Length: 224
Image 1 (spheres, rainbow, N blue to C red):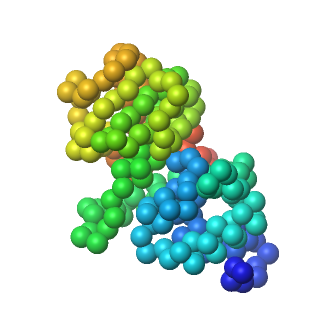
Image 2 (cartoon, rainbow, N blue to C red; image 1 turned 135 degrees about the vertical axis):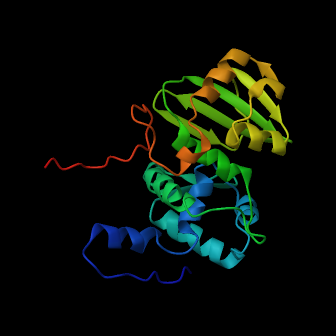
């Protein structure tokens, strides 16, 4: 039986949202599900410090609220759960300003870095890249207004990038050129897709003016 959820008992949309997703680990579980369906064991591995009992409780409450549903051997986001993506992206954008360098005790996961590419996407591309990082596969699906990132190998892709972890970090997060990477398929398409990514600092800043992608904060201005 899942523990009773605490409530702020305030008639406010923010308070009600925090009643639902403000418990520890819940939004981090949403982050993991943004990468695609996940098995129980994969979630435990990705979130060290989360006990089996607490994971079971969080999954139960998320399923009861309609944020996830069970699949063959795992769980995935529902349409309602997927609607939390903008919340996760903007919280990550805000928090990224305070990251600095990893602490000795910090877990570093390339999957989370790939999710941050969503906030750097200019928009306008229409291509799928497969990325193989030492046997771990990712799908980068560039759509005109959206970048979809999955921790899985795509059925089809215009190009496949075979990278070491060091090469992946250099290419996607340090601005290294694609020339030294092992690329199968359409090299021109791969270069064009990567060129649609803003430099790394934009993962933590509002996108440049004219960006066609989502995750551009709409800041109201008052004329004086």
